[in-house]
Amino acid sequence: MKANNRTIVALGIETSCDETAAAIVRREANGRGTILSNVVRSQLDLHAGYGGVVPEIAARAHIELLDAAILKALADAEMGWDDIDAVAATAGPGLIGGLIVGVITGKAIALARNVPFIAVNHLEAHALTPRLTHGLDFPYLLLLVSGGHTQLLIVECVGRYTRLGTTLDDALGEAFDKAAKLLGLGYPGGPAVEACAAKGKPNVKLPRPMLGRREPHFSLAGLKTALRHAAKDREPLSDQDVADLCASFQAAVAEIVADRTAVGMALYRDRLGQDAQAALVVAGGVAANHALREALEGLCAAERFRLYVPPVELCTDNATMVAWAGAERLALGLKDGMDAATKARWPLDPDAPPALGAGVKA
Ligand code: KG4
Ligand code: ZN
Image 1 (cartoon, rainbow, N blue to C red):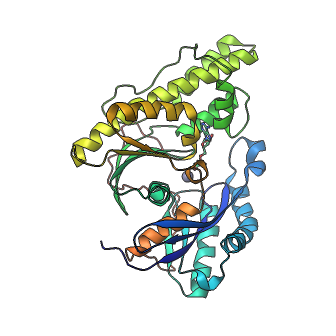
Image 2 (cartoon, protein in one colour):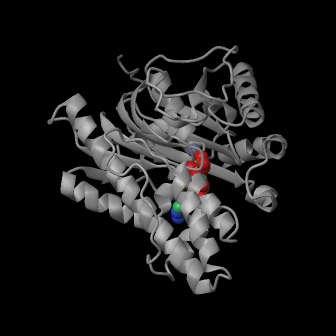
Image 3 (spheres, rainbow, N blue to C red):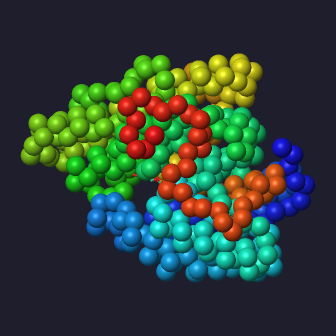
């Protein structure tokens, strides 16, 4: 596919989970991009009391927050409606109520302004972010680790992804969130577990599920259960116990991720050849974890891969990545009609064989 040689200014809308976000990005004809505005309205406080995202509350909050977020994105970019060449909205995967709010809003703007509409896959948006932040060329290996997803993918070009590994049960961020919940650390769990781990020692023996397996899949449910048993054995828990449990959990996760990613790297080289660009991109909220990054830095040095981690505000959910993915697609002539559907599930690689034992998140 040949890229279009004009500049595209795209408005992006993200409402797939608990962030209401709008952003404006410019993509030059040469493929370079500039972020003109990036507005994120977190709904964390609305969901914190429930220990997780409540879909109905999220959808209603998107309705209340989205228009103002879009207007702020325009104002921050010092732009008016006439400056927008395209509108991109996340159409899946995610919570269907929120997706509908974002997609209907995006379609309405596109229709009113007579500009193309692009229905963006949220995972593709994460996957293409390093092309905006680092000008990275294809292909590369992507480790996507968030509250909802844990996948290793080969990113070959816009629209072509090969899934190498996925989780058989919990997503990585979800495992952090559940660990935090059982240790009484609140939501979201990842940052709380990391902060607490800094005060502890990894001296609690925990399993490393899937270590050494030939396919780079993940499984985290057993680790979570082992953590629960270890916590129960130590009750009543002192602050030091909790810190040691966090440090041990985090160390186990880092080792698992490095092991699984090493298998992903070998498969990447097998499939694309030894001369393929050796680049690993880490995206998703869990990429913020320093222990994980350290483990991946060590792995990349050993395997001679270059490591790319987008800045944390672009690793977590945002609309900049949606605007960018929309612009990348439009540059290739890919756009969607007013009948574009929202999809709760939308795998990047529909041909990936199901992971043996995989549950609903595969
Ligand atoms: O990508 P994201 O913002 O939202 C989606 O799930 O799509 O990721 C949020 C997840 C949460 O599960 C959160 O606990 C986790 O990322 N997270 C972390 C850290 N910061 C956020 N996990 C481990 N360590 C962190 N520092
Ligand atoms: Zn995400």
